[in-house]
Image (cartoon, rainbow, N blue to C red):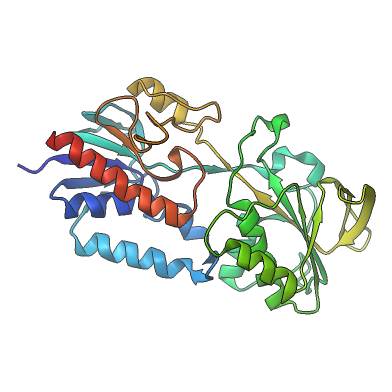
Length: 335
């Protein structure tokens, strides 16, 4: 009989894991707490660095899952699990020969950083809001007018000890570059600024896109963190910062302030880890058994990790790791 592997999470990592498991002769079951699969990819407009529509990637993954005949349970929240049993919030229990955890991450709540005024002032938005606005074709100021000066602030909820988020979310820098280019394409007359601590262009094509943002689109990059944002009488946002390269304080008014929010560990990671005997990293993400030779294996036999449940990653890394997690689960069961 085919071995049954429950994949917890129906985002890109979960779907790719299930596809690989099916191809290897297993019987995967995707369990997704939302009403539909896709995870955070559902809220994305285009993907860096190629500007590939996120909807195309998502549609293809869903198509492959349907074509493969993979069983999928939606609106099914997992409350606890072991390597042999998965308990759902409605009381159902699913048996399994192995489990792959692919529950992803949670976006940092920008309202925690009150000094930036998210949720308080008009025209302060997050990178996730911008993706949604781009997808819906309605990027504008709160009053519907075209922004003439736009500022992006990096590392909101990343590398910040004050909010217990000391890790780097990795994809915020390239997201800021991508979105800044999208703003310039929409509003060629606008001045666009990126305020950053360090620019980290770690992926293929990222450094080239960063250079293109400066050389082709004349996007300004300022090394310095915004310390405060406040509303102006005309509905704009006044920001205070320091250019740490020149040591000079800066003050400017912008029409739109975009907070590049980072990834944080899911709130339920602690409870899930405790029930299954799993280890977590200091960041709250799940800790792999070994970062080199066992990066998709947990410290418990029969439980595996795929995607951003263990650390921030981009879509390409997530999909590759999902395939590796599936292979590790198959090898474990066939041993």
